[in-house]
Length: 420
Image 1 (cartoon, rainbow, N blue to C red):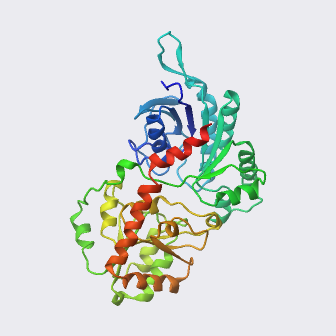
Image 2: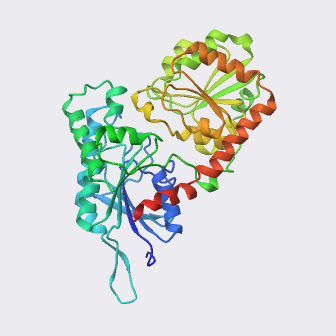
């Protein structure tokens, strides 16, 4: 039961996940902090996600459980087998129809007040969170019905992403529908929250009259700042002890995270440069990279490890690498992997030609032009030749920035200001 000053907050996101089943998304991390402040949180999510098969299975249309105080409504998901198909769009529609069918069951929650009246769970704030823009539909309708604040959260800019990276035509009927829906969401929202620092430029291109855009970047749970479980794989530990200056990448290896320039730079510099490259992760581009660059002895492809071991992997690196392309980059980036790298006190080199942010602000890394192999090779050599003290200072800057700006206790307070 919320206190007198608390809000009933409803979050609608098909891809929200608690750490009990896979990894905890920001929706739950915000929720834990809001509950500490006396708010009440209900999350509507799907029990189907192409990233994992560990989500709960149940009979019927929905299942509710309370996770660390968060009332979690699991909706029976449409089971599309791939992430890049028309079936995924069907899954988005199916989820929104499920929300609109089931949400009325959660206006009153179990438990009685002293006077015998059921606890009121009508939302005061409704947050519709992408990736699926379709949550704007259910979020707006529910917020309007109950007079709640309506907040749209943008973590990936659709349909711009699907036209830039997916290659879809701007006149594709589904793209046109999503374009209309995006504009509708910006027009009807009380506030738009974006993980990108320059999202306001995009929002005002789509809906020039809208002004209330707030950047709340990706973050880290406070209790995870010092989480560091040692790797148990003896062969991997031995591999990480190889001599040389170590460049690390940890994350998905796919078209949205193109790291070919790193391999090209490694090939250009050769094995005598004294640089070792460690690529931790999985994705649909991994095998093609292995076929093309697996013969290079200085490049090491490592199978994914549990999240709790990633910090130990990063601790063996001297510098971490990231790369990003696509038109959405012009509005800036906030990457979960950057937060992981920075929390591990590691400098970052990023191949990126968009709107620079965070790394510059933190003084913990550099951007090189995207797809410029020579520029990246030169930067790798520059870092290799830095003093240990300079490398350590950049890593210290990274860590301090996370502690001062990117913990969820800090970010949740910023988000909470939008509730009134």
